Image 1 (cartoon, one colour):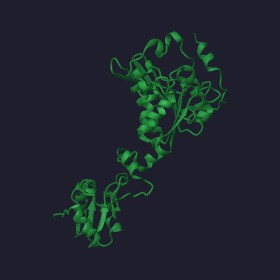
Image 2: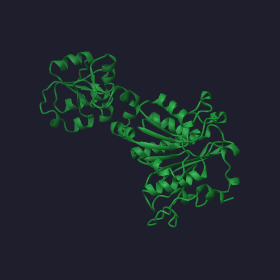
Image 3: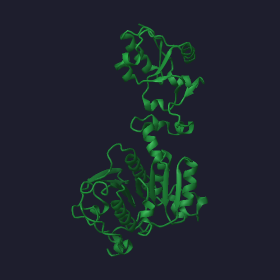
Image 4: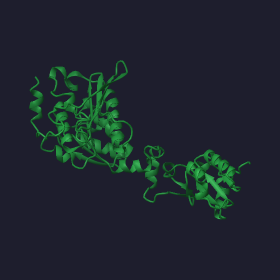
Length: 378
């Protein structure tokens, strides 16, 4: 049996005359908009249980998908089941929209900007509408608006994270611009959080930027972490790393770690606060900080400008995965990158049963003088 394929305009006329229009795409695809008046029943569901959805086998059916291919296959399957009056809309929803025919959003809470801006996420079954809403409801703390923070912030805002709290007390310097892509030459001398807020708001005005011009310390760390779902460490200094680790263990907040040095970088996820004894914390990896001569900062040792971009993007990826609850996080794994050889290496990390901060059953020891602690390794 040859399936009839009316044009979208012809299908609209038939629909107005009483034909039943069914969109056979998946729910995450229909979230981007569907032909007005169509019923949404995914292809597999419709073919597998046609009688439940279509009790009248003689009803005139119009099937539509994205391009016309799935709807044609569905029509053929229904015809084989005894549906004698079934058609497939030529060109599918893409042609329907291109011809300016009426479209409806299946969820009234989605506006056109949301649907268009996040359309590529909405097409992913692992994200879809529910996942994009989780991103929009999420709050991320980014400590540092520099080399690591710049790419991480860009992609977190672009992905639709609802609130991005950025803490940094520094100002933009010309030497930053080689790697800190949030900032421009015109921003030299401005607070980094102010420059970052302007750049990110221009990229995605839907993301709320909370610019906090403060250096993270024991006195303000819990206030900065208040209400956040994930912390991204872009501070790139040892006192901040130990402080953020300890606070995240205490408060049960996942910490996305990143560090760069000359031509090498590394990243991991420390989630011991929520998974004590199973996931390590930063102190399990580094019980004590290295000496300054073994770990000089970027100003002293230099850094390849693109390197923080690679590591910062990995951090953004891990933060998004944690928010969505998809994939396998870097928890318990240290990902190391060598830019000169273009090689990644992974090292397994185990939780230290005697860790001073995250050992199961161990009470939080309290915050310390982290600067003195790190200086003590000299």
